[in-house]
Image (tube, rainbow, N blue to C red; front, side, top):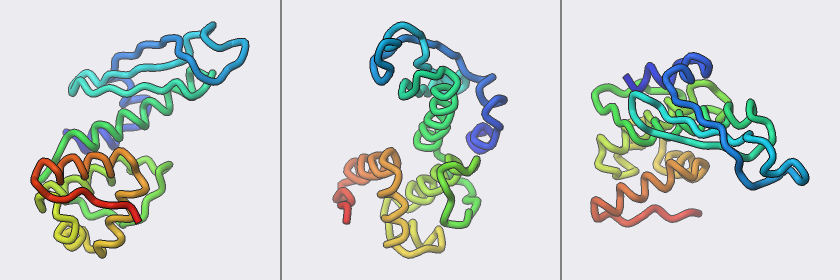
Length: 158
């Protein structure tokens, strides 16, 4: 189910979400706190949420919140039955980016968060996997939380 949610086009994905606009501090000068441009989304099937308030544009914040929500779903829901085996260099603007992140966490979960074993399962080097993890703060944090819970040392940045 997770994979099909992450593969949905943003407009179709948003149909499964509760939307809430609110006022938030941040950039905007005179318009700050005068418009409800911040956005909070809750994915109804999972209860997972995300919000964005970086822009004065509600549409820009909605797009950012959808991206964040997909990434949150990728980080929270595991599929350890079958790996999809993506190419290992995917740009964050690629529509399958969140699914790629989920795939990496699935491999780590299967391998009890032993990075070298997960890298082998993904067909890449341990160094390549660590670099991928470092580039996505949410993925890095989730990996280290899981490693610590398994009495493994946290990964260190280079």
